[in-house]
Length: 234
Image (cartoon, rainbow, N blue to C red):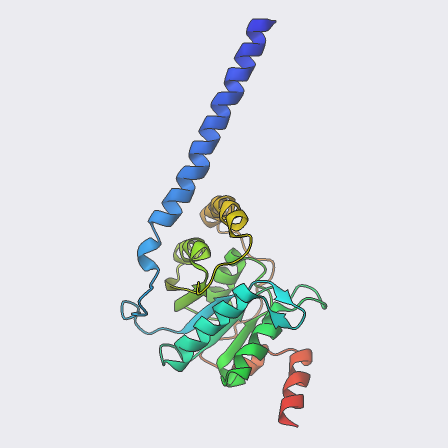
């Protein structure tokens, strides 16, 4: 009985070690294959014919962006105002009536002087993987700059590359964020999850008709947002 228990323990230890090697190996691979595409000096000349900047969603506080999301938005707006891009794709979670990341994002961008027609909303960007999949399949994006915090950029760029997008990453880290240690650990698991998703090319929750970023961003406004625009115009 004692010998049998020892064997079971050693099997469990071996499985744990192998599992850890796989998890941390995939994590290292994702980072190693994308780190050269994170641009910290603002020189995006390596990417030609940039279609848009993709700003990935994050938490909102009521009708205001959280600090992490605000920093992403400010970086994306800077790229637009500097003439690096002429279209913005704001992608995030709008899966419930009471939670709408993308409307908050678009309102904030417009308040900084960017016209509505240049801002596209992806209401079904429920995850980084789904945002990247839909950027290509729904919004006709081929070449883009992705904006998010650096720890998140490795995964975003990896997913984009695996789905056939040509992207460079613009990190938005002007400050420290509470709870970052937890996010760093969680991100290791998220990189593994999306590594697997990219192998099988799972379809996102929603697809729908093509709304090209070369057109009018107002086509992505829902009734709620149109009422907001009417309030501004009046």
